Image 1 (cartoon, chains in turn yellow, cyan):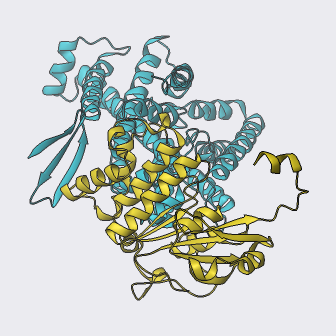
Image 2 (cartoon, chains in turn orange, brown):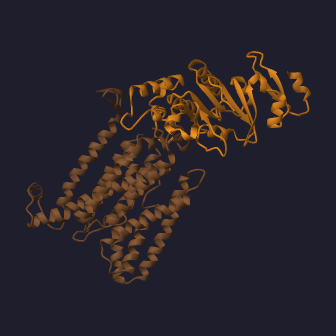
Image 3 (cartoon, rainbow over the protein chains, first blue to last red):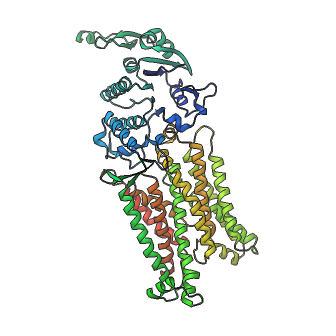
Length: 247
Length: 355
């Protein structure tokens, strides 16, 4: 499998099919049982972990913030791979942190305690932390979980904008198929630990593939506004006449 | 060159940013304050005791020691090493606790709770009762061996191949420490009365009777171990965000955890081997320091260390004064003072997030 650079790839699949495992393996958090991850022509397991961290950032699922940390302090931790014992806080660090906070719209909260923020704000802070790492590859594990629909959409737009404007490569795991189809350039479809389909959204997001991956009958439609594909599951419910009348 | 960053932080940059540090002002003030307090208390500690000395005599003896004179002997042979030992042991226990709390991400981790002190205790008690003729100087070696083997056992049992389980480390430690305490108590009842009372004196954590050699041991080992902690402190800050984040940010997690646990155990083991088990300093000092230094790790470590030194010195001085001319062991007093302080800190913490 190849991750296409400068694009947004979204990993989808049923619960427990290995989406997070795949993402963590790419990010060298887990060691592969067989095979290897190649980053810029080098085996990731044989590269110094700090060097990898300068190229590849990961936001795990549901990160826990330690007590008493401010937004800026959290975002500053993203600079770790660029610092050393003597060089703990350079001008480049300061700039990267401020820029990341601005992109994620948390600059106004810089001195606020993370404990006091809402789920959406908190998630934006974590994304700012990964952005401050200034890596070409950004891996995110379900960044939209537990967020309101509006916040989910805002967050996805922010991420896609980042890919387009700064030429970063995004790989993420998402649960919501429609959100994935709407924002991805490419989809990676997993079933039982195997990548079954991998390609541009319009080629792989079809009813047969979704039936194969999720064992779910769906109808694929086009969003009239964005022309992005949407899937509607077959509900197998008896039609209720009064509801039809109301519509 | 320095420039303001925000209200309570400033950066130092030298040599075209080859040396660039960020410093928290509040932490610097707190460090300065605790250092001053520590010096004041040191002087008081030299002044307090059954042999009456005036402050002027203490200062005269310090600036112009006259070996052989009673005041000089009292200060240079007894009170000075005792004062330094109290501070150093406090520093070491506090650092050990701070590091354990940091890497296990559990604020209950403390060398005296997870069996490290109990390992030392069992080794020494067995030696005192089974081999009464053994020279006292072997106690340090035995205590050290006891602590390190218990720590190794906990590490071995809590190690799992796929992920690090900090909670397992703590729970196994607590279980093992209860077991070791029970065995120690059983052994005490088995021994002769005079042996048992000698062992009990050591178990209470007594700084009385340390000599300059002990101070040297404490001093050199802290000087060797502290740099390891300071160099790793940036990585420790990242590990607070969780193991996955730490790996993603480029921390060599396995190496870091093992080296830090080893350092932490070495600190606690050395301190315990010299003065016996001292409880609660490793728990309270990092908690107290965390109230001032909410985020950074290096500042927190330094502050914890100084607060630990201060607390144990207070405990030792109070132990000398409270029921004079008898003395209370410092280890007993740290528990008596420590528990109320700990409860107070915990109760105050609840009100913090809303403020």
